[in-house]
Image (cartoon, rainbow, N blue to C red; front, side, top):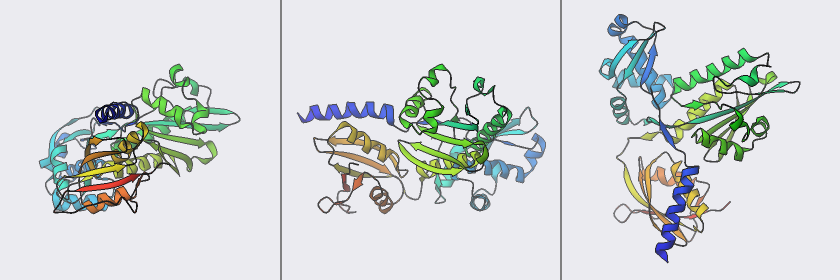
Length: 355
């Protein structure tokens, strides 16, 4: 009987994760940047080489200029060592390819958290209320038919270009919907404006996107719009301009998925009590998958009331325990407390909370 339950849970977990997991895609061109130099001046200019390196660092650790300047000064005094190749761009600038692996290895030795090349694709669903009953949804290039009646079509194109530029600077893959017949059969303007996330989650499957950023923009409030970030059905609401919203998205993803090289990855066992359904198994999976400290995890055992996992994590055990304690679905009760002893078997025990 136990083996049958275990098999059912494993199979269920597979299909649950297939449709709900935050899947990462390899960010192409993450280590390629564009700088306003020609080949000759770039080769001889350390300032130009530092500029190229700083643009890559923004994508890996965030845009804090003081931190980046200090890192380059102390750990990358000769940025040319991290340049693979460079070639002219058609606009006269230079495309520089950096050695991403070497840069990340250096960063992990400096006590900095790093966001790697695997990054979730974000679907942008942005509804615009133009007033007088006119409504628009921003679409991908080539699918702008519904804009044709709008007098603000050029403004929308500029808005998209600015958002796409910031996404490129921060190194996050984004996509706008086509809003063709297939899309409109699933999601329309009202779904976005009314926060019907169920329909938007269905639409995201078409684009293989596991992060959704929705925006509700009024023509008279272009600088402070209403936004919602949906990651694994965890909704975060905020107000910002379109450009600020992309930076907010990047900061959030960076915090979630960056990892630290302060200590080598370690393993610990985690036992979750109170698991009674397929959805419980999936909820635990999603919660663990969203903890940036956890490098990977596998389910090692399961029965009718609990599941056990082996976690591989970066950083310190106290930080991991704090992250688990702050989770919305894990609870340390009076009868089931986490147990951790450095000289004995490492195991954490929690109880599942049902909302």
